[in-house]
Image (cartoon, rainbow, N blue to C red):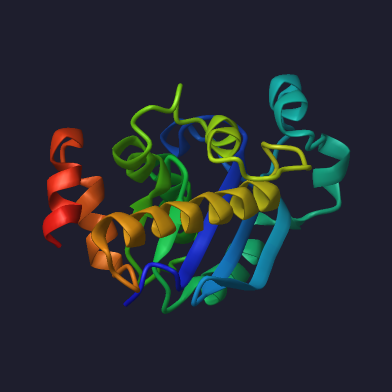
Length: 202
């Protein structure tokens, strides 16, 4: 399976860890097919309690907005249907995977795709970047942006653009026409020092 056909997702949440009782409050995702965005998914979800002033300021998602949103279990059931059969990407995927796993466990659902992290890939490919925050990398790669980071759909759209730019870099460095998902998985687990060798000999 190629790395340009998958789903890129982003959660906004009440806090940092579902293990501490934090919940998702927004999910945004884009579906890529052969490098083209073909579908979007975006929904707010009510976590069952108010969000803090910090989270409201950070995300722009207010308690008034969430009061009219569907509960988490309804939104996540729809999202589980959306992602079936696709590999998954997120920027700092360990964070998003924890919330995806936690929310789906609550409704006894799962997913059959494999997860890969665009942040880990960037650390291997963009070693001269000042840092690997999404906004920094968008500027570093010269990708146009005109929205607000820390909203789920916009972040997933920007991650998709970054992802495709990194796939283009891999194609050039490895001299290949398509980037297999398995190669991206291998790159994220390769030491920075060995990335050039892996791509040159692929």
